[in-house]
Image (cartoon, rainbow, N blue to C red):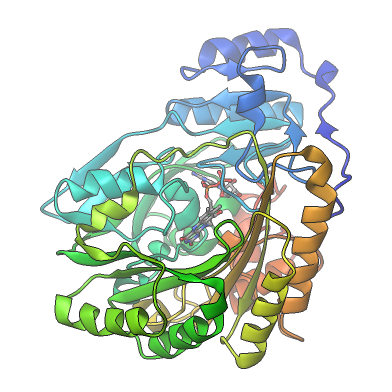
Amino acid sequence: MKTAHAQLEVHDRSQIDSDALKKLRAQLKGGLILPADPGYEAARRVYYWNPDTERGPALVARCANTDDVRYAVEFARRHGLEVAVRGGGYSHMGWGTSSGLVIDLAGLNRVTIDPNKHTGRVDAGLSSGEVMRLAGRYGLAPVLGECPGVGAAGLTLGGGLGWLSGLHGASCDNLLSARMVTADGRILSVDAESNPDLLWALRGAGANFGVTTSFECRLYSIGPVTLGNIFYPIREARPVLRLFRSLMAEAPDSFQAALNLTTGERGVFVRLCHAGEGAEAARLLRAFRTVATPAKDTVSRGEFAQLAGGVPTGGPDTSFRCVATVYRSELSDEVMDMVLDRFSEAPPETNIGIAHYMHGEVCRVASDSTAFPLRQSGGIHIRIGLDWKDSAEARRCMLWADEARKLLRPASGERIYANYQSYTGKGTAEAVFGSNYSRLVALKNKYDPTNFFRRNSNVEPRQA
Ligand SMILES: Cc1cc2nc3c(=O)[nH]c(=O)nc-3n(C[C@H](O)[C@H](O)[C@H](O)COP(=O)(O)OP(=O)(O)OC[C@H]3O[C@@H](n4cnc5c(N)ncnc54)[C@H](O)[C@@H]3O)c2cc1C
């Protein structure tokens, strides 16, 4: 993360000829937003809005179909504009906005569920929660993440870890096919028969190769689940953390939990989902309910689709946010001590979460069978999130988060989960893609040799 004093990057709009703009406006079914247009302020924002992510796009192309995306890609290429592809806008790096042209996919918003084949065809503008809710009407569930607002396509293209990953792998393991627009404006169908090399790459490094406009994924029949949150006073953080570690180390594939330390209610809470029979869930719950006296307990039996929440907001509000993330190969005593120590000095409105304890099916898939390689059992993802209302707080909050990340990162061999990448620099792409990196470079050379799509966990093309 850079300092909180980055200059706002604004494209020199005088380079764009007005006839071309008029033509683009007429072509786009979804609409075009320019800086002087109403709605521009909202259209340029992303979820993590802070001095490092803030951009003033020259144009925001609201795309309503694949042709709109193609027009936008061609326009950006002709005018040398940096492109940002925005699904849900939840990138930790703010990659969903740009000083050039934003391809906003929110208008691509249809889902078709095939209840016989147990598949869904999902447009790229849909949030995870919307897909969960619609699949739930057929008693089916997608393998998506744990936050309903996050873009379903964006999450899947970067790997995708969620409540069902122990049972059914990462989201990208369940990606069957996709439709995409490449940097040279071609519309490609990608599946196991057509462009299988791209299918492999889309499963974890997808943002690098083009704009996915829709994708097909597997769905699963999931019966009643046990789900909810258990809150404890902050003084119980250490025993709860220890219990979390020991239960997760032996967790059945059907169980996932995330632990959060939050300054808001000054407490620790566990979010959990057990997608299996009630007796096993009861055993795990008993342990969480007796390790300390819960301050609040919302866990009950319910439907998986309840995890989609109400109507996902999917959009940013007026506050500022930043996040710094660390992947650790295990939740050691040292890591626990550091997490508790950092939390004890955290600024107001801090949340430190430990999520996606790696176990089950997602770890059984070979790390080179998709572009998403981070599949070691026992791994954990730590997220240090801060929000603030007053822009003058930005520097203090962002530096604190970044320093906490640096303290928590491993002494050597740092790995990064693409979907949680929170900084860039030398070696970050290798840290994301590990031994899959060189294969991805070869594919980048083939499909995007000019690095047109670079606001992502970027694989840089290079000469062989
Ligand atoms: C609150 C929160 C909760 C989260 N929970 C989880 C979780 O449970 N599991 C998990 O695995 N991750 C989780 N994430 C991380 C999330 O998966 C990534 O941030 C993901 O990249 C967000 O996708 P998006 O479409 O919402 O974001 P965007 O910012 O719109 O896009 C993210 C990246 O993907 C690219 N992209 C998006 N859509 C497309 C497309 N259709 N074609 C090509 N490129 C595209 C963008 O260019 C950008 O590089 C969470 C993030 C947040 C902020």
